[in-house]
Length: 322
Image (cartoon, rainbow, N blue to C red; front, side):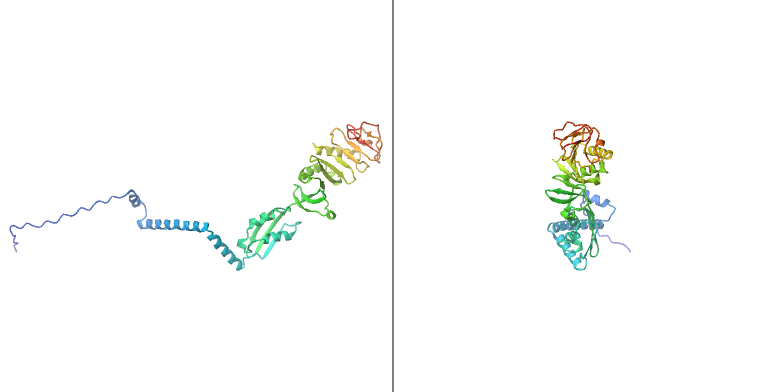
């Protein structure tokens, strides 16, 4: 079969394709294409990030307006109504302090709901009381508050302007003491004596043999001690190195008893001598050796010079004054 070609007609050529404009990729797009995740995954991550930031901002704004606090309080109150409420208080470690005081502090709450009990606030309130050296407060669900108390130990009774107060070894005031109920503890007297309790305990520790014989200690002029013995004598100690002076007095009393022999006052403010005074004597006597004091307290020896206070004095002995 033969084809007939018409003369004068040229064959149709295909129309040229239009050139598509080349899209340039930004640096960000090129970085995205190189990531080891799909574009869809990346899009989701960005969406969640934006949502999270918005949520954080909303929470911060709500916190500023107090919304979470109100929600938390409401939840805690609901928990209290459901049974998580303070119904019992267990106290341990309490020996001398009034138990009802601790109960009152523990129950002083705006809400009894267990989640709303401020444990640290309860502890700080308890530490305001002199008896309490430390306290630990905790919860035991569903309804018990646990309070463990560390009490201070009384060490002396402080007398100031006629008022008696129990104090510990550091001078912390514990509680008032009635005159008819004074405990068997050392008595420290005078303004500031409570703040000197630690030094007084060190003084007693230097001469333990004399400790049970001392009835009271008076803090004089905010600088030194006068000790009063159960037998009635008063011993004036120096400002400096009082423990050494007390040890020396204990040695002298051990060599030949001085206490309970009728003496009224001993003075060791001058470390070089011991001055003694006895009522009812008309002459001052200086003794070279305290062992020469008679059993009735009558000194033997020669007359000696008196010191500036009118008390007889001897370099190393005891002197008596009328």
